Length: 481
Image (spheres, rainbow, N blue to C red):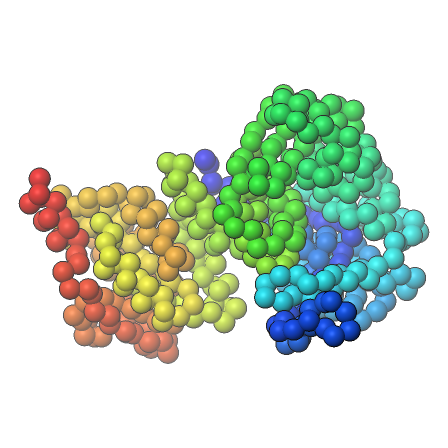
């Protein structure tokens, strides 16, 4: 899998158009049944607002580092103000049309013990006049973007979707559609359409064996003038179907917590990956991994690049491949975490043969903060430090194993030159809040300690587990052989 495209995520310029919503969550505990009716009584302890619908698609794109603008309709009301404030806090450029004839679409959910108790919908269908305003706004914006995502929840914003797609295609843009209309011909000209199984069947799709599904999808593609169909199939994963090819991807989640917004994550991830020039089948493969991450969360959640990178590392390891994000990309996400107020911890080592002592040590290091960065000596550095017979395992394999640990957030190799066998220069780039070193060291002997302390950080020395070392493991193997 060629993942050099991941270096270009921030170059994505995507416009999301569709039905924007405010998702409101009331959280509380349930301890009894109401005496007034056979329903649970939820004692509300918290309120949370999230961007929903097309706004959630835009949020997913923003969280994947894509540049995104959002075009939609809101009411002249408090929910509209709340939604605009949310989008601003997410650094999403919102081009929302405010009107007073219909309220901002709002979906209110009561959550207790990680389960939805009830959902309340506040909405009225937007008029053709409002949709016409959206179409005219699209015409003025279209040339600023590479790709357009239409997020249709059948609330009236996309009444003129056929005209909107024609405008986008006329400007030479790639078009993705998350559909709600049973008439998929309404989306004629779209390059990608992403129905789930229910929407597929409602549009006349036939579900049976794989051959039947494939032929039915291709019939719809031909009849409706579509480029391809990404059919999302719940526990069966998803299938990318084109007139000539079919690619199947198994579901990547072990336990589903909440499927709310999963379709938004799929089309957002697909859009970001396609905008980098990534081939469609590979983009869908990554969107499938993102879907597995998001359905394990509660509510309309998103996936961050670091989560996706970690999951991708595990996925590629399981399939016999490796991926390590470039150092500059990692440093960028470390800085984003710092801006969110998260405490950055740094440690380093060779980690040639991973053993229990390493695992415990890294878990203790992670406990000193929120995110753990591991500086990893490259192969040349280890050979200089430990002799020509080392390392036992090459850099890519060591990095893959370390990255798969729950305690580790990022791995950055170092040591390309002899003077860089210590991580001092890397520490100056990472700027950790806490520097951790394992072994019998004085703080003054630890590379980078002076920089961290001068920057107001902490330096801690942790004891290694007695008897646990790579040298002992190698000696035992040699003795037993």
